[in-house]
Image (tube, rainbow, N blue to C red):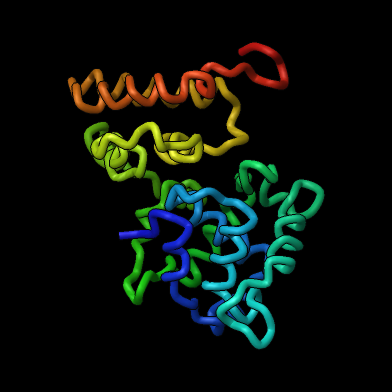
Length: 236
């Protein structure tokens, strides 16, 4: 169980402010944590959604003074600016698409996650494993043995596959494709295609026809995005 739409963010509970103070996290770190979870939940990391989640999680920092139920969007916007490469280097951003964490930003968010835990929704904890971002990548020496069947099983829990099962693939956006692949908007196109092909190879090796049919539908839906050229080089 996790938020499946921006409206569900209103059900996210306040985090323990004492923990945030104890570890001395900056507001940029807390904002990176919010972006981290929006990405994990496959909810667009737009200015509006980050503002709401920041205020729900950390009202003393990101809600309007005297109105803890309302987000201070200007405050969040300042922190988004601080996340950019010319600031802390935690994220890149596009007003039309959202905010996307860099490796440095994911490491910052993972530190907050390890300190204060995952968010809770209506009082129920959301498992850290629900994240599409593998925080093990930030911890040395803790990699697991790869299991192809488990890999596909985890992908089935992603929103894009659930929408495929419900016949709603046409409603999906690029953020859902990236959530399936565990990648980010600034990932080079060649890497997106490589990960998509890797998933297809895994499904073929397991003779998982349902997942192959799903990937066929995804490829048709997002062909233009998958086939785009690297803007830096004009070709692979």
